[in-house]
Length: 371
Image (tube, rainbow, N blue to C red; front, side):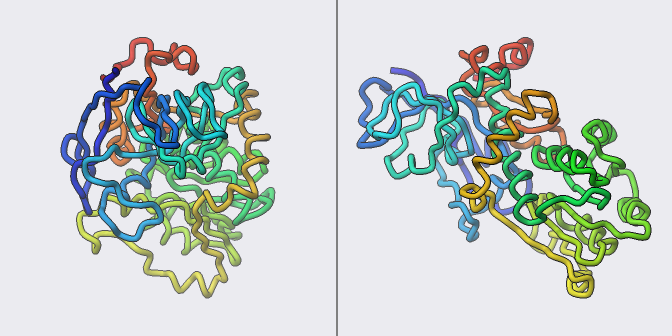
């Protein structure tokens, strides 16, 4: 019998910042991992989870979001990586490391058979590259797939000499977008919420940066656009930054609509800022496309896994992570996504007992371990 420590969804919260201990709460339950009935499913020992801004929308109740709302009293779920402990599904056996689209933020999860249809086995040699397990939740995981696949599908081949604006550039998706554009010879201007983050984004290859909290973003975009306009916008933020881009967009410009984080925690619906110049999408003949990355997986997953982990291992792509150690640290780590305190991709190592195996032993030394 083990104690399964969990982060539970506790209260529907349509507006405002999530509140640790109120929106979510800590819980635990006894679990007999050797004898618990699987009922045709799989039991996993959970290794790590990715914390992403889009999870906030699942805390608002049934709002028609593309993934179901969280259920009060049940574990919060996230994209994660787990090890199979026991299995009654032929495709999976004990010891398999699996990428899971909906993994409980808890130490063990029972998955019904139908849920395993979304499991993807990880290459058993992946960790021999020296990459941390959490890298496969960041630059080599869903955020990396988001950046890579959306550019391939929505923009196509990036044209050297063209200009790109990236908002939220220090985040998990934005930092890879900046690097892919830089490597393609695209000129990049990127926004972030502090001078330190702007310095980091410049180190990734951005030609210019904007601290949107202290600098005049529309003016800097206008100067960067000069006589050509800005050809691409990778939008993680929406709101005023989207409006500012539309004003300086080149004719036939392309907007990749990845997120709208500026509106996720609005206290009232009317507090969400929407561009007042949307008609310019018509007059400038812009392409404005949203997407869900899972739609691109059948076409681009193999190509992504061939290219990006190798580039990371060789140091051709840089990756900054913000890893929290221990399942109960997930509450505070999630809040950091919205306060701007995070430093790169936010992830939680749940299996802290085997941190060395997951190439995170050094990072855990001296760090707080939540339990």
